Image (cartoon, rainbow, N blue to C red; front, side, top):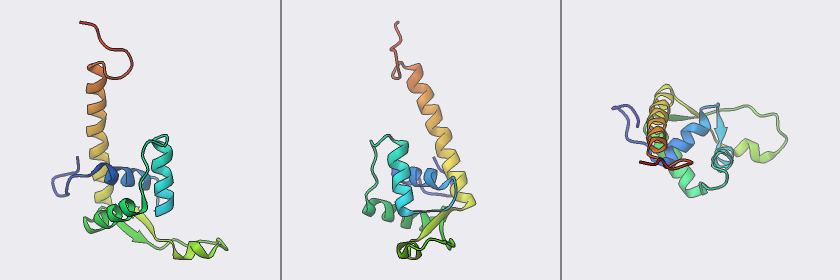
Amino acid sequence: MADRNTPPLTPAGFQVLLALAGGAAHGYAVMRFVEEISAGTVRLGPGTLYRTLQRLVADGLVIEVEVATDSPDPHDARRRYYELTDLGRSAAASEAELLSRLVAAAADAGLLGKRRTA
């Protein structure tokens, strides 16, 4: 749940913000992060990823940044790098707090691990 000045985050939006919380990254690195953190259960395709990034940029949660690279790989020069804004970090933190409360409620309801007995 983002603050009241930002639109609600989609799952993909939160996943991208989470990937960028560690610092600037390019799209492929964001896709890999989401796939790794979800143990392969979530895969952001390029269309979803770049539409999500465009929306996050338009909402002021993410900015495109210049990142110097010493890589001889010519593909690195064409990559676009993104990082969180302060508003993006705040929105991600708010969403993480909401998800934490939801997971705690799921655990209390016996949805994680063993079920409670009445």
